[in-house]
Amino acid sequence: MSQALFIKNAKQLITMKGHTDKPAKKGAMSELDIIENGSLLIEDGKITAVGKHEEVEQKYKDVISGAKHIDASGKTVTPGLIDPHTHLVHAGTRENEYAMRLKGKTYMEIMNAGGGIHATTRATKEADFEQLYKESKQRLDTFFEYGVTTVEAKSGYGLSLEHELKQLEVAKKLNEDHPIDIVSTFMGAHAVPIEEKNNQDAFVDRVIQEMIPEVAEKGLAIFNDVFCERGVFTPEQSKRILEAGKEYGLIPKIHADEIEPYGGAELAAEVGAISADHLLKASDDGIRKMAENNVMGVLLPGTAFFLMAEFADARKMIDNGVPVALSTDANPGSSPTISLQFIMNLGCLKMGMTPEEVLTATTINAAHAINCADRIGSLEVGKQADIAIFDIPNYMVMSYKYGMNHIDTVIKGGKQVVNGKQLQ
Ligand code: NIG
Ligand code: FE
View 1 (cartoon, rainbow, N blue to C red):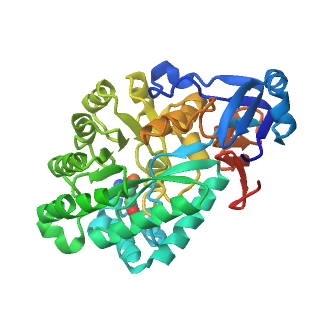
View 2 (view 1 turned 120 degrees about the horizontal axis):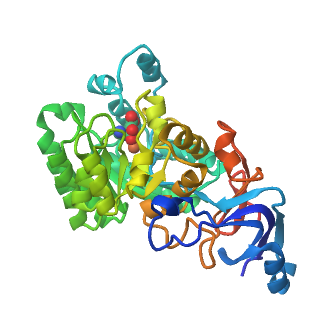
């Protein structure tokens, strides 16, 4: 049994309790459950008490006397942040394309000319396992420094069985080695390789017949994602790929309506996807169908910001009953950021969300978007002790003082981690 940990007397202890069974929707996205002067007890990596400081201290005197203490006076404590959509494992950067876009080229023009996802695919294919591991680990370290304790990570820069597996194996090894938990998604259908541009359906067949069965058999992914966009995969092709994944137990996710309205939100509802992500151009009908079918909307405002595009209408989605989560979409082309705190700021300023909603969207709802809400996303007795302590007196400052990292301390599975090393 490891030494207990007592996080005491937080100015605000935000538990997010009560939404473990179902994602928070509408008004429930504003229910944070804030305990002023709150304390939290952790034993064997799990939360064993949460409440008012005096009450917890009184009731668990004996355990607390032998526990390590972290004084959270004046600070805000939340569940560890969760990023439910990243392209974590890849090689290289694309600042050259950023410069081209600043001069007027569009994201799709660059991709169709062999850059974009194709450029990162070339770099990722060339990189060996160690190189990919090293680059991705650096990103994970930064995620952790910014308060993120779980990330979803997609493949999709291999576009062949061998290199998709390599990306997923890197994610698997990082999950074993790094304090951050990684939940993997297969995204072989991220783009049609340029060499096969004129033979798209043959590539779709390969994703279905060759890649999905192997990825599933090796247990390398939980979700199956596809980039459903004009010029990439059609809704029909996307549907085939997502349905095929279901046969192998892979849960559908979808990059939907990012650049153009293309029926992605509707398709997510039809195939029973756990989430539809992006949704900048989602139709009203698509939003309605998502709400009716309990499809989470995972919104990625860093992408709209970085592509200088119109933002997704989070307000409309929430008001219509779509449970919303937020994510960085961390990737080298459309959103090269790792700061979920900045994403929260964009959620408020650019998508009509409130400081309460963005916190729900990066904790318990983000946990639901990757099917992990039974373990993480809230500070409740029995849950994994993944905790972020922010050096701010209340949660609103998190997205108000923008572009900064407000983290003081991160606890993962009950362990305090500093510079990637566990302190106890
Ligand atoms: O989520 N839209 C497709 N995929 C990523 C971008 C990938 C890239 O540009 O490398 C996204 O935006
Ligand atoms: Fe993405």
